[in-house]
Image (cartoon, rainbow, N blue to C red; front, side, top):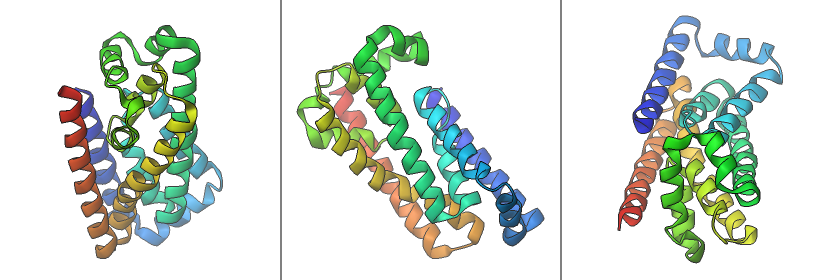
Length: 208
């Protein structure tokens, strides 16, 4: 159900973005966003940040939205910063307060997923940890790894690498759709395809 909601969230935002472009045009839409000043990136930052702390929310949709309304460069910066801070906080909360607090944040029905991830020995394999952080359930991974003995100095580099690799294609998808950039959309689709492969590999590792 969570995957379906996330997928529908992305599709909904993409459809909304295309509709706004068709109605206002890119220039006018960007002008409207510019009038909001700093509140536009702050608002998207808070939406993305909250979607990671509470993993039930569809966070990928905000990456598309960020690229669409802020452009690729600024949109990517906002999403990367939100992911870095929120994932670090998730790891720290899980490490410091344990399962009780995590369960309050994510709900009882999502704790099985987090417990499963915490038992996959990700802390012993840096490349596997990085791969899991590049998947669509990276928010659960942060909580799960926090419940292990993995040191912060092992988690942080894996998080940074995963953010650098996984965020640009999704943000580029939003930016390319609004700007009509075929090259940017092509890059984004290739990146999304690669991330889908990484997700599939990670899921097989989780099952095995």
